[in-house]
Image (cartoon, rainbow, N blue to C red; front, side, top):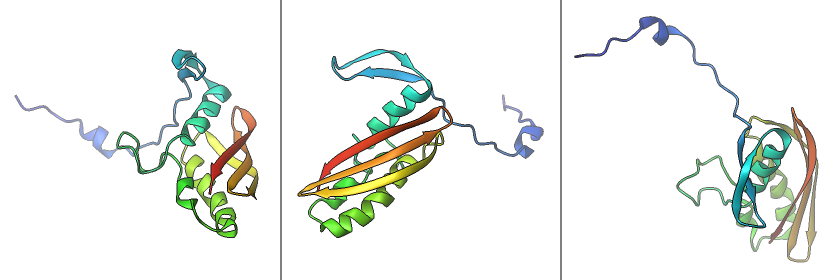
Length: 134
């Protein structure tokens, strides 16, 4: 038996669907799943997870998930400062729940890179800070 296709379905344009916001809530203190979360809290958790994951390192994630800040290890502070801004945007903006990043500040303190920024979403905005060794 050969399946039949609906020709009308083949001619309809594909429409991008936004990422769902509902996800499992991670309780980092206990190392467990603590129910579900949605809205701004879900996006805060997603931002946290992105900066816990090195891009291209884990097969389970697509190539546009995670960050590349580890590439800045051993680089000069001037280079690290200039590239960190781009890397932060590339890490977060593929998530269509995030509208923009504002007030991105990159500071080099000894061998530490401190990045502060505001994440703007349809659910509201929040401040985030990322610290990495360089």
